[in-house]
Length: 299
Image 1 (cartoon, rainbow, N blue to C red):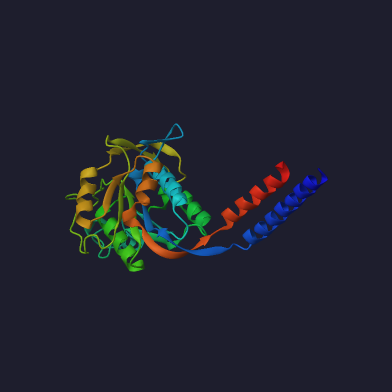
Image 2: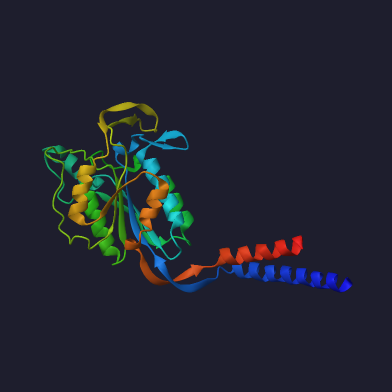
């Protein structure tokens, strides 16, 4: 009997010693090289006024298109494997310097288009998702419609600028572009669709349609963010326009219905890259240490 108890005591000691070693190893932030499927994305959010329309429900409450897109993106990024990378950008309409230039023009700013419209504001390029998860997550959480620099929405220009930006980053970055696809034509005439000058499918990715098919009211806010009724216009998801852009660019159109669905779309095999990457093993080491502690306590 004493021999059994002595062996059990030794087993507990070894368990605790092993847990201490594993815990110490985890504190050094160890990594191992692995060949695995990873994903690289430049994600752009439409932050124009129409994204304030509340035609989604989250936790039983109506939420805006922008809020739901942010929720889906944050959840999907959490599901990406270590070694993947994500960059974030914003889409509005025209660069503030261009708008200021036009407002100072004798003919008035509405008299002509800016010569070089800037519809895209990159916040940062793709960074690794595990080591930088909290920075990425908090950046997305902080995105707000008040960051927009114009009410107009040249969706075609915004998408093309996003594709060109992804192409300039490297040859592996894919595009994710959130929008309802219903352009506000500030300068009149048509829906601002125009041919894509780049090669079709040279840059892959997702064109994500947000919002409902039924026109929804767009809340109006003051400068402090207080709701002050609704705008006169309504907005809806324009799938036909987004399908035209899909055919023009070779991106894959998907409608945003749930966070789980978007996460699966983001991890589609067609967007994966097989790479040798450093994989953080702190979590498995910590889990093994916990198991050893539990064995020492329970046996």
